[in-house]
Length: 472
Image (cartoon, rainbow, N blue to C red):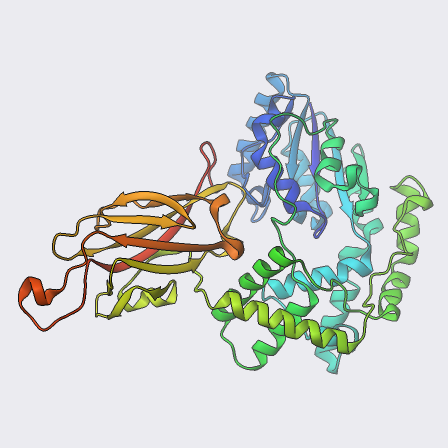
């Protein structure tokens, strides 16, 4: 049995590949391709096998590979982008734990001037880098120069040296290096290209995900994040704004991907030129199959256009961010306002929550986009509270779908909605229709003229996977 080791690199569609491997595991195995379950995650491939090193899981992997060989599988696949950074020692140690006859190392490579910029934006997205956008090319001071050099000229971007390290550790392995460029990928898609390396093509029963499941940050949002950070925005609020930003990008399209000048991009290309020529000669189909250095990967407009785009993006984010974001345990009492907007049909607040006002009450919240994994098929919403007078049931409509009447007491199991029913920006618009709004003035002979039916005490929501999938 042959083993294919997919070792990355980063920002080359690795997450899309891994998500499709996870969702289509049965489809692949029915075609002779084993996707080992040891250490397999829904969105990060086999990361748990290798980071940190887990001898117990590697033993389980070895046993799974032996079983797959006995069952007649022709190929097994392991995928984790962090593998490309392994030292020779770690590669050899990994090889000793793999009971297979033949190994193919598959790597996707992105042109260095492009990946320097997308990689930086990924770090900004994860709040792992504070170097300002403009300082990547024009650093000030020693510390900024060190950060800038690491972003623009990172040692891991010397792909020839990377592959030589793997070849020295695995001299008997086969190596397949693919240039990550839509125009050079099979069917202009990395998932289709990856399947081709398995001698497969998509067909009936193959689950295909939307193209924007892993939305990237754009330059405009990175600049806005810098501004928000300068004004003292907390990390929690920054993370929420990032999620909202990704939602607006997914809904309306992203902005610029490049922030370097043409000279800045050319300097990166010049630095890696010799190594790239060796890469093409030894690992690609020839010099003509190298990176397309004619393709622009630098900013093409002026500062005035950038300023206008920043204003537009800021307005879009502010508009979406008026709806609170929440995916998690129920929020109770006054804390509900942190995760939901009770914007019509509610009385003033009580210490425990809020009473409804009249026949109908409305609330809105948005789910965190980055919490939505491919394995998720729906959301369960928990709205719990108390009733007044003869009221016992509430008709619930979410995003226009009538979910019927429910007793929203403390033991209610939750309301389910398919993720396909989410409004743009992952919004839930919830309407509660009440049976018999009653005034305490009439029922209890008090001065309270309010019309009460349902008192909301808590709200929460959780995502749930499709049958047969877990969220490891």
